[in-house]
Image (cartoon, rainbow, N blue to C red; front, top):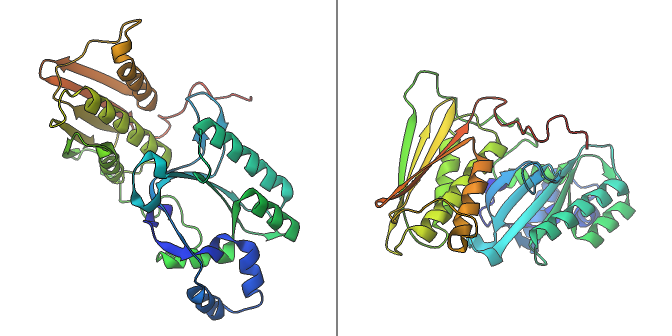
Length: 324
């Protein structure tokens, strides 16, 4: 649902349970809908670029367990200063307690520190199904946490043409390609312009939608291709050059090719400061996908990345069986 936000304006009362309850307690659905429509207080939602479950700082490192973490950009401006991260928890208990609010706030603080976020760059949102004492609602307000009850959420979803509160994660995905069919292949040519890598990531997301790919895998694919594109832009040798991308999707895996027009590069050597960024970029890519192959020469460099899509292929051996 968050992917549909697209800088739309919605009533602020949908994010403020305390004021919503005060304004519409005991009123019928029609009265609430009319009241929200007449309320002039609106919030402009960001353009969401990716949504994932949980948040991990580094592979095998500390994890901040949120139900959802969404990366967005204010006014659809894909720049660092307009980045905004939404951390979301879904509470299904009969009563939203103070301990749950405190625990959520502490995790948000850790996330903000780890990402070095500026004030206003982290939005905190709790969706809850039960009741909440006035003291808990007040505490959430002090922390700047948005509270949305199931009733508000149904109204929120209705604004985006989604009638039900919850849908299964696989419900609207396109059917998986039958085994034995020719792989789907897509090509894209990008200019070496700022933020062009986000276009490549968006295409990767659309390609992955043709298979039953979980959100975490999609985000890994997007991050890998963003890193590969940034490397290509930095080392392509010309601002007027092009970066060519190829996406090949089969039921078992997705292959990503990123080719620049540079003069090639040699592997990073110890103490080589001039290519340190590229070396670290390739190291990150290798953590995000299952296989990386680099072909380089005078005609440019091609980075081939492979992500296995078979169930169970993405289990992290560094955390399996880890009890802390």
